[in-house]
Length: 620
Image (cartoon, rainbow, N blue to C red; front, side, top):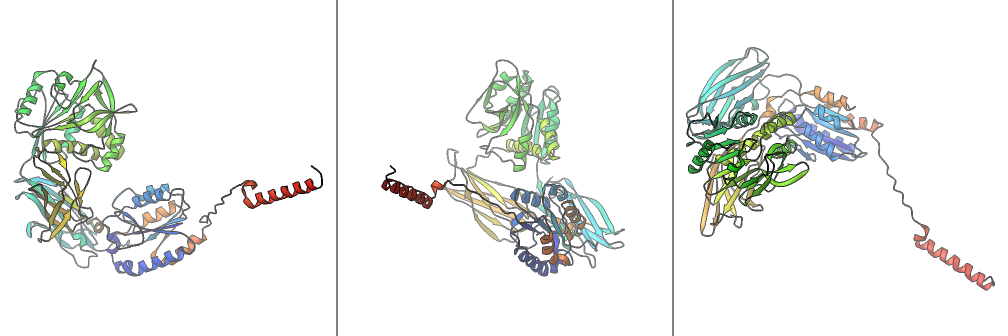
């Protein structure tokens, strides 16, 4: 078997040979595939931001992930007779791991076809824009624009930032080298609330290879208030630092932290109260809990070795922890698949499989029916139904509980395994987001992200409640999505087990508004909102092909790198390899003669004839 994988990303058709790639090259590659098919079984694939079977080359993928191609080929064709992998690419990757390392899993050679142009040509480009997706009304917010230029020494360009056709910042740039990189730090003022679109643009220079990379759009959600969080604790603890770091990754949150004995302020005005190892037996913690209930402020309790369990049980948090003696277990988190209050990404779900245990009280956990459990406890090898992280919700209040201390170990393990804190930050921010948002008593809710990349599907979830506030999905939910030019797109939600979901597919870059509606009895409920689809121009940033990477992959796997004008020699090269051979399988089956009907009949006939002759001859 020969595998042929073609790079289907945009970077291949940005350079000067884009016409050849789209027309002549595709024809020649198909001719080579037909030639190989005479002697081999040929499997064709395209890759970019996804891996797809077949040879449909449109060169429109917005990212290039070669490592995911290698991983999928290793899984699909493990222990199969693969003669070689033919990788046709420019060697530029901007997603996933370095393919040079992921090629270690192959036991067959990789032949690379070096496409693209390695020569540096005149080009100015916006390499990256760093910005906070959330800013606050009336404040200034920073934007970092990384500008690059190749072969532009002595030339000039103008960097502008505009919003709604109005330029809000402009400055001239003089390029002083042929490999120019510079970071421009800008301060803009948030003058209007809502989702705002800013366009960062570099003016064109003469004879540059591409102008696609001269522009980037960014979307910033301008809020008119922050969510205020108060974190009280019995004493300093590593959990406090871990929680603070995770909370501060979301600029929508403003955190105040103090020990219970130091804090002398009010809790009125806060959107969430976090009690770390409180109540601890003193009266002050109970006072703040009582004030939170009076003001309908959600509370997140983190139970630890200093928590007074008698006082905790009196809080009616949904779980009573009955202990005969004060002792603790090391408890691993196990995700509850039936949890529905919010969802964690697949990456985070996998990360939690390797997270270390928390220190939880040893005892009997009596759980009420109102508890929604995110993680249950695994003690040793036994997965229990005891809640580790859970939530309760009434019509006017929310409560969350982490029934153990040691969250800081989760954060460290996340970095050790994944070299980031994304999984830990996600679970903390989603817990806080759920708790801090005011209880919505409406009978119809639609939720979705407010920003999507142009290669991501637009997905919404919806819930409908009856007058008893029970979740139902008997009626159809419809949505109208409208772009900035007033063009409407009509969609219908699909039904899940208890709710609804809509996958609107991939939409063009733009600002959108939406309105969803459902009929329940004689009532018509509606919900509305906005979202944006942001451009992804990463393929246009680097236009210089990396043939050195392709050469190293081929050398490492005992293959060879070819150029497009050598494409026709590929079939003969593969046929000449002695290690690419057909494997013949022999299947031997043994059967007793007695099981073959005609032999059985022949033997029976001979025995009968012998018996008859002997009988007649008087031998019997």
